[in-house]
Length: 137
Image 1: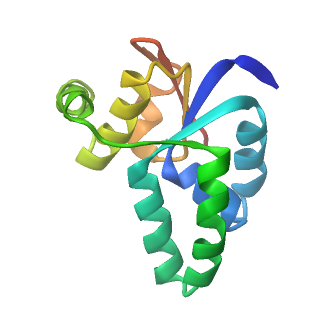
Image 2 (image 1 turned 60 degrees about the vertical axis):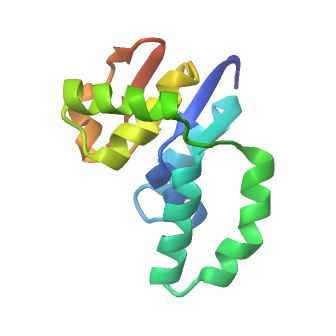
């Protein structure tokens, strides 16, 4: 475990782990265990909830929501994050929600940002300010 590094996780990493997605669960588990300090966007709480509704496991989400809040720092959106997202969206040609989630990590000066989202594939290994993007295939 890396104690000094703070990691920020995209929703898809959390979904892969929480819902034991075949082919992604092991990778998600590995990157989640790698860091002591973990964070995610408030947007991820909403996205995980919608995923659980879609797959008719909302009760599972409700039971794990409290645990998520204990294991992760949940970062709300702010005006500063939204402004940073607009620049990230323009500079890196990311979809709006992806830009908001990455901007949250960058604004919070998280050392690592992990994602399975193909929209980040070209950013793999790139450092945006203090945040290294890790696209997990």
